[in-house]
Length: 180
Image (cartoon, rainbow, N blue to C red; front, side):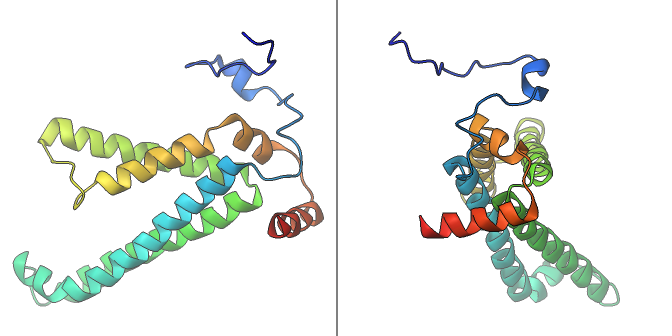
């Protein structure tokens, strides 16, 4: 090796290492890591994609309701249920993207848990039901989920999200990132 103090990250790490305070001072600087920025942008992209899905649902609803043989008296309930869940999911993604951008460790961890469940669901649907993974179905969402996991689970993203910041320091950090 070339004497570089930074070594390649191990495939698995003990829990003690993951929950211990970060001693990587380079990651604790006030500059937002690229991994955090990309993770936030990917989560934002998922939220925007959710809004497009809602638009497509609104356009396809009459034909979809006929195809699924939904009774006329149940159509308004089903429509508003699906619409409200979709809007809530899209807005939640957008709020999480903003929170990750601002440095929230809780939002980072919740998003990683959510995309892990999404990936597991797609994989189990594939293995158990033979559901195809195509561009029209789940390929795009699974690939975005994996990119989000890779970005938000990096050491720099973890260290930056865990560092204590006051509200004024966060505002200053946002101003610094806009200048760069």
